[in-house]
Length: 118
Image 1 (tube, rainbow, N blue to C red):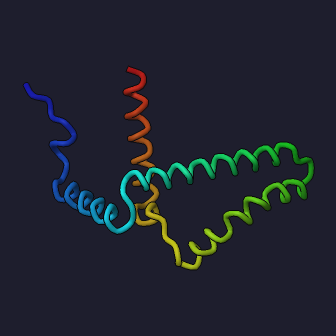
Image 2: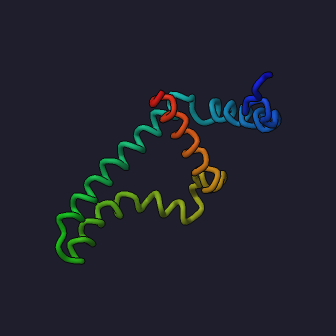
C-alpha cells in the first residue's frame, strides 16, 4: 500500500501562484540570496537592539529610567513605524495574515527541529 504524501494533495494552482510570485519577486525586487541577506540584517539589527533594550531595562530602577532605556529604540524604529502607519510601507506578513504567518513559522521550525533531532 502506498502512503500519501502531503504534496500529493496540494492544490496545483496555489503552487503555481506561489512560483509565479517568487519569480516576479526575483526579477522586480531581489534574488533569493539578497532577500536572505536583508532578512539576516533585520534579524541581527533586532537582536542587538533588543539586547541593548533588555539590558538597559534590567538595570533601571525607576519608571523614568525605563522610559530613558526605551527611547533609543523608539527613535531608531520611528521612521519605519511612521511610514507603516502612514500607509507608505506595507510588510508582506500584513497581506498574508498573522494566523498564516504563525502557521508557516511553526511548521518550518518544527520541520527543522524534527530533522535535527533525528
